Image 1 (cartoon, rainbow, N blue to C red):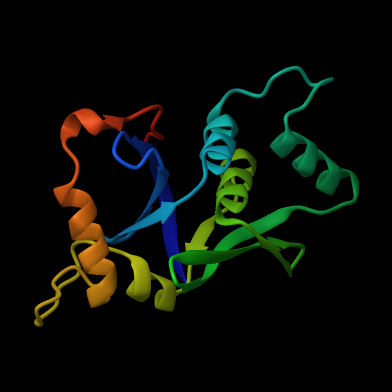
Image 2: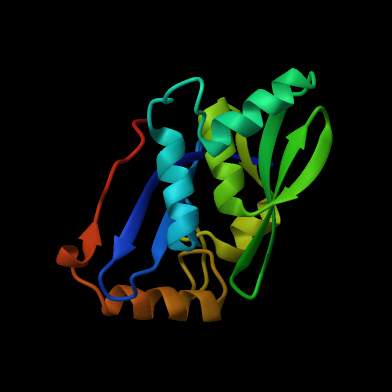
Length: 168
């Protein structure tokens, strides 16, 4: 498993689709995860200061319920990738529980749990920095790289709303 850190949520004016950026902790590859507006909002809300303890947000409620049952989130894993869709799991007391990546990342951020990805997921979907000797210097498949390059060709800096970003 590869340790990841949350970088930021970006929203492009071109596609109006939020993008979670997760970076290898000890590397240079970035895992771009397209998500819904609701998923991006979940991640961003997990970064906010907790509100009123008598009116907890969803992530606080989940963490509080787990704690009341004697559970804790051990780690969050991105465990699969196919056709542009990621699979994640939240490991609670050693038991993996399937989750959407956005919810899993939000819980990891809010609960301080490690965020990990399987090597196969990084090899299939991460971009940037990987030393390679072939025509694909960014480490993704040809189809992924074509999609990512098309995306990059269609945007300019004014398309990004950088929003709040996590500090390393």
